[in-house]
Image (cartoon, rainbow over the protein chains, first blue to last red):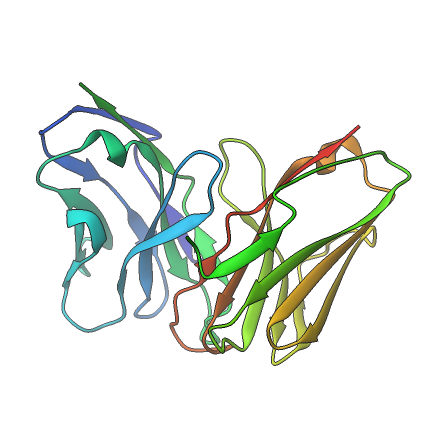
Length: 114
Length: 114
C-alpha cells in the first residue's frame, strides 16, 4: 500500500539554526513527491516538488529536499530558520498513475524559538 | 495571495440551512478538488472534477453536493449538515487530471455548524 510517514509530529528549533523535517514514503512505483506548508488559517502553499528529475530539489523560501530512493525518503531542510517558517508542513505523494489522488502525511508542526 | 479564490472565508449555519461554498481559478486548470480539513489533521479528499465531470467521490454523505458549472468554477452545496461537519473546506486545482502536477490550494472556507 502506498503511504506517507512524517516521523515527527512537532519539531522545535531556534531562529537561525537548521531545519530538518523528515518524510518517508511507501510506493510500488517511482513516485511524485511534494512538500506543502500551511500557516494558521491559510490554505496549503507548494514549497517544492520531485517528479523524477534531479534528486535534490530546491524550493521557495530557502527550502530544499533530497529524494533518496534507497531510503524511500524525501526529507525537507533549510539552513537557517526564520520566525516566519513556523507553520504546519505536509509531505505528499501522488497515489496513482492518474495523479489525481494526493496522499498526505500526517503533518509536522514547526515551531521557531527566538 | 493565492490563485485559487474561495468564498466566503467564514460561514456559520444551522443544521437546517442550505448554503453554498464557491471556488474560482483562472489558471486554465482542468482538474478541481474539494477537501475537508479538521483541526491538526491533513486534508481529506472529498471530490475530484476532471474536465468538469465528477471523477472521484470519496463516499461523501449526500448532504454535500458538488457542482462544476464551468472549467473555472467549483461549488459545494450544503444542506442539513451535522455539527461534525464543522471544518476548514479547501478547494484546489491542477493543470491536468493526470500525471504528476501539483495542486494549488485556496485559503479555504471555515465552516461552523450550530
